[in-house]
Length: 102
Image 1 (cartoon, helix red, strand yellow):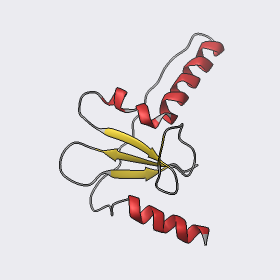
Image 2 (cartoon, one colour; image 1 turned 60 degrees about the horizontal axis):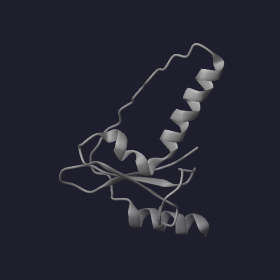
Image 3 (tube, rainbow, N blue to C red; image 1 turned 180 degrees about the vertical axis):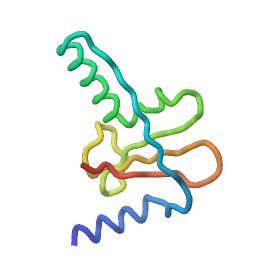
């Protein structure tokens, strides 16, 4: 029963995808020592899970990022497995969303 409720909630908050594509982004960071590597990793992990602040990194293109829980409620916390990220890109068309899967 929970799975059916989840699917119905997803249908309410996610538009049907009609067009689109996938792109892969890669970044590398070198560190002199394992301690500085760990610090860089933790900082990157924190930035990635803090979806509600992604707009700061998107520049001035007016893209907005919002985090929602499985019930479709907008939330202000770090992303967790099962959450949804809504991405509203400038221009015509519906917003896009994706789920956080493990």
